[in-house]
Image (tube, rainbow, N blue to C red; front, side, top):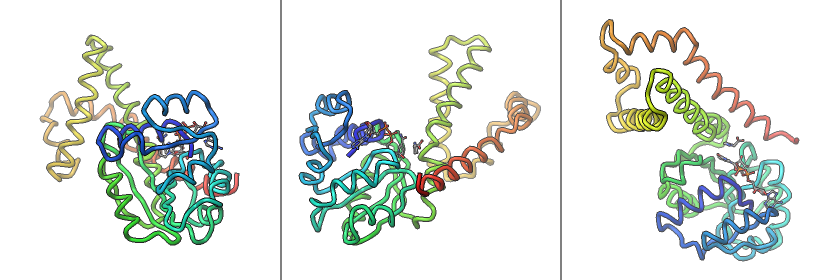
Length: 262
Ligand SMILES: NC(=O)C1=CN([C@@H]2O[C@H](COP(=O)(O)OP(=O)(O)OC[C@H]3O[C@@H](n4cnc5c(N)ncnc54)[C@H](O)[C@@H]3O)[C@@H](O)[C@H]2O)C=CC1
Ligand SMILES: O=C(O)[C@@H]1CCC=N1
C-alpha cells in the first residue's frame, strides 16, 4: 500500500534477487504513473488498499507517515488472522499501527533504506501486536535477501531512521562533494565520480570485513606529513564530524516528531 520510491526499491530488490516473483506482488497507489511503473515490473496494481490487503499474506505499508492511519483503516476489514503487516513509515509506532489495524493485527515495523535496490540495505525491525517469532523470521529472510537487518527495541528505531534510513542521502552528498573536489583538482567528472563512489564502497568494506575501528583504518591512510593529514585537517576545521553527528541527531528528532499527531 503506497508504491513510491521506497516501495519500488524494495520490490525491485526482492524481484531481482529471486526472493519473490513479480507476479506475487500487488500494489496500490493513487498516482497512475506509479501503478504503471509497478505494472511494467510485472506486478499487479489495484485501485484500492482494500484489494491489496485482501489479496496479500504480507502487506507493506509504504505511504508517508501521515497516511498510515488512513490506509490501515481501509485494509482493516480484510486483514486475516495470519496477515503480516510490515510498516516502513518513519516514526509510526507499533501502538499507532495497532490502533489503525486492530489490536489483534500481526505487525512489524521496519526501517530500511533505498540500497535494498542493489541488495545492500541497512535495516532494523521490531515486532508488535500478535506477530509471532515465525513472522519475525519471515521479515528477517525477506530483508536479509536485500541486505542486513537488525532486530532492536522499538525505542531505537528513531535513531536507526536518523542514521541508516536517511543515511544514503548523506553519503550521496559526500560522493558528490568528493567528485566536485576531484573536478576542481582537474579530473574529468566521470572519473572523479567513479573514484569517489568506489572509495566509499571500498572503505565501507574495510570497516565491515576487517572489523577494525574506523579510526585505526584512517590512521593506516595517514602518512606522517603526507597528503591525507592535510585533507583530514581541513575536514576537522570545517566541523565534518560534528556535522555528521548533528545530521543523525536532527533526523532522529524529526523521526520522533513524526510519531506525534500531525
Ligand atoms: N525513501 C526512503 O529512503 C525511505 C522511506 N521510508 C518510508 O517509506 C514511506 C514512503 O516514503 P517514500 O517512498 O520516500 O515516499 P513516496 O512519496 O515516494 O511514496 C509514497 C507513495 O504513496 C502514495 N500514496 C499516497 N496516498 C496513498 C494512499 N492513500 N494509498 C496508497 N498510496 C498512497 C503516493 O502516491 C506515493 O507514490 C514513508 O513512510 C517513509 O518514511 C523508510 C525508509 C527509507
Ligand atoms: O526522509 C524520510 O522521511 C524517509 C525516512 C527515512 C528516509 N527517508
